[in-house]
Every structure is written in C-alpha cells, then in structure tokens.
Length: 335
Image (cartoon, rainbow, N blue to C red; front, side, top):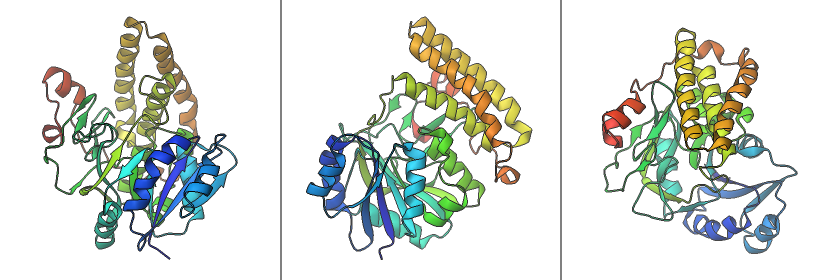
C-alpha cells in the first residue's frame, strides 16, 4: 500500500473535476500516493464523470453532504494510510508536489501537518488568498499569511522560499499524519466549513507537534469554489467559527478578555456593513454571534480542555499594523 492518500472532497463539482483533476493525476507520484475523490452527496453528474473519465481515481460515495469538516473526517477514518492530503477540488498541482511534502514529513516525525506554497490559479505570479506561504494568527484571532494580509495579496518574487514553522496550514492543500489527525479529534464537524483547518492546527500544536509550510511544493488554487467572499453564508461561518475557535482553544486566563475584544471588533465590522447598506452581511454577523452563544456550550466538556494552555504565538495586532502603520507584507508580520 502507498503511504499517502490524496483526498479530494467533491460536492456538485463536475466542472471543477474536469478542469483540475487531470493535473492532480499527472503530477501525483503513483509510487507513494493514491488519489481518492469523496463525493459528498452530489446531485450533478460528478459520479458519472469520475467513473467514465477518471477510472484510475478511487471513488468514495456519501449519500448526503456532510460539509468540509465531517466529509473529510469520515473519509480519513475509512482510508488507512499513514499520511493524508486534504486537497480542494479547485486546486491544480505541479510536478513533485506531493513528493516534497511527504519526504519532509517522513524525515521529521515532529511535524504533524504541512502545506505547499499556494499560488493563484488565475494569476500564477501571485499568491492565493487561502494559505499563501503559511498561516499565522494575531492576538485577536485574525488569521493571516506570509504573502496575504487581509485583502492584500503579494506577488511571488521568491521572498518566501524557506521552510518555516507556522501556526496553521491551509485546508486547500493540507497534509496531515493520519494518526495525529485522529488523535486530536479531526476537523470539528460543528464548524461545517471555514476556519476548521485553523482550529485543527491549533489542536495539533497543543498536542506537541509542529506545523510547517514547504514552498518547494507548489499548487495553484482557484479559490471561492464553494462560496464567494461576499456571500452572507460565508460571512456567517467565518465570524461564528472564529469565535468558536477562540472559545475552544484559548486558556482560561485570557479567554474572556480576548473574546470580549473580538466581539467589539466584530461590532465594528457589522457597522461597516450597515454603512455600506449591505444588510445581508450585517445580519450574518448578528446571527453568527447569536449562534455562538448557543454553540459554545457544546465545548464545556471538550476532551482536550485540560491541554488548552498554549497562548497565541503571535501577539501582533494586525488591524493596528495594517490600517494604521501601513504594514501589509508578510515578511514584516512574521518577524
């Protein structure tokens, strides 16, 4: 059996499979990795396309849409490989992409997860928003990357070619040790989608492993394949899940204070949407906070609650640095 399972979760992505799967097949070394497509209860012709056009790909069919988090949880439990790569269906790969991830992790048993360099599929000179060259998080819970801070995405000029430890690796192309993934509880199914990989990486760090970005491996991500950035559903999930993540993973000594500050900052975001007459996204923030109050009760008996002692690695205030100091590049933010 091969060492790596490349797992692509699909939901009504017939067009994406036709466009992106050929590059994954072409550039994935069959001597170390097998490719799986997990269909999350699609109603389009995805399954038929996979069976007729891509018979070399292993197919797992679910009867319903379990979302990103639970879809991958179920698939990884079913597939008994030492390593798994969670790969979005809108990602194209480059030669040796999986080899470089596998070789580094196999040589470094302290690494629990890693990611490649994520570049834009539509403009390959630039990084891609969701992951870029490795993820971090500021003291108020705002995620950012080497190569992307808020909406500023950098051109790849070779400035991030070093392998470094990061706080989180993107779910667009995330390699994990399967045993570590399962031992820390996998992706939180209550999140459904968005922020779930940051929450997972936080728990991997708490378990004593490192997470790294390996820029010698390169993939190209379309982005927005499930929900566009302006979609109120995406706004809702991002705001709700960020609060849940902080509630779950911050130590008792700072949880209340950090959540209070974050909720004040979310109120500013709500006001900004209101002033732009974007009432749907403003209401999405209100609903996110309402549901957070209910859902946080799910974590009073979290199995890792006694281990949640790790504070945020980065004490930067990204809002202050970005908007008031004009610091918009990852090299500054990760020092």
